[in-house]
Length: 612
Image (cartoon, rainbow, N blue to C red; front, side):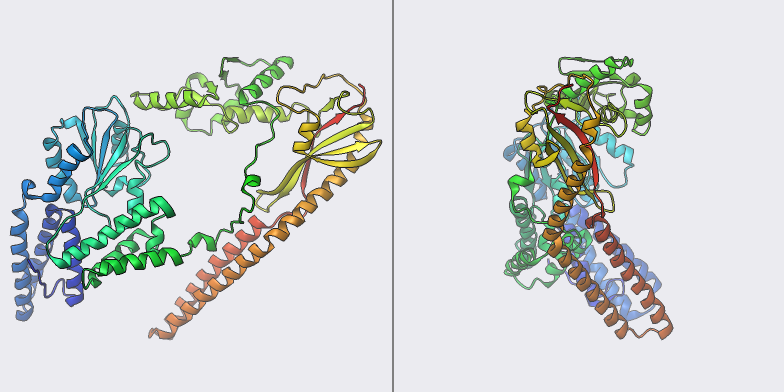
């Protein structure tokens, strides 16, 4: 049926075109969504009709109401058995996806943008799939956060009977649905590629163990104009799939990086659609946008190119084989100092009850992460941790795993590391006597140092050894060279702890420190030379961008017909806003990319061939 509107909300023909787009979008979702849009519009027009005495306007309004009434009758006639897309959904689930509610680890997520469509699906689909009342749930924007999280928790628990989740886009961002689900259906097609990405990311994310199966349902029409508009939505689907395979970010295609702006851009394309081939033009336009677009973050975050990927990823230097061995050595150190500590290591489990100094740190953590009586169990076994996470996810009352992952950033390990820093006292370093590896007059000072930015982030650092023989510096060794020469393998080198002459070794430190400063300053100079062109380019782009904003500001107020006093005030406000933004970024650039003048430096150890 060809629908024509004369005057809607008193805004003229342009608004009528926009309403037809809104109507079409609702129809693409479901007859229920379109019916709601039509009835709301009828109610508005009837209110206007009651208020106006303009006969010409009354005639126009009555014509639009009559047209909408005819459309309402047609939509009401589309019952579920005649709603082809809904029937296709059932076919897709039972035949294509072969989904069955009997499998507790095969749960289904259906997304729709329209709440009326969501209500329609919730009222019809469970019965048609022979689901019990506790086997399906809905998630919509008017639910409280606790209600939403309760639904998510039940959906992710294996023992829960919940099998089907019907969602509005409130569930499209920041919610994990992938634990027991790898199937998703877009019942209607969002007009934003960002929403595509957000929806798909609920099941297609890190930790998913099965290949995600995602289906898109499209309304078919014999009308050439509507069919052409549907082709535009098909283009969006194609670009979303292409982004997943190649670019990774589908928002590059529309280039506006805002959901509302993307929807407006798609609506504009549909309104400009003059023929079936317009979809091809739209696709070509998106391809061109993705090719020419520049990631907006590139203008603000300087990322140096990685010329040597092998050098960028390196093995960290280790003294202990793993975190468990580090914890074992720490417990031994506590025992030697006769400090009481309720801790032990059995197999690959490090168990410890938090002492008072550790409990002080735990006060800043969420209560649910603290085990009962602050008795921590840690293991480096990743498989065991995965099993523990799966177990707790299925239990009703378990809010956090009983066994934690043993890694350097766990609060217990951070506490151990801080205690270990005090093992030799302040401003002190161990002396390791290796007579079998170094001559009696030969020593190596192990140094770590670097240059932080003004924000305290280390930009240049190095760990190296300074070889001194007969009182003279003869070489500088990288960590790798030092490790090979002194056979610094985890667990193989042990200091005997025998007191010996320290004064002669202390005398070596001034020249070692001077040499370390020279080495670190040379590293800083090389780093700054390499980054110079990048930083200059950043500052130049920043100046150009500010100039563009300035030109736009001048142009806007030159065309403005506001009184001079108002223009001056508003222009000053906008100018201050521009200055503040660009000054803030310039300060960020200076504070994060510029380094302090002097390096920090730490003597880690002295290796010597000198007898004790």
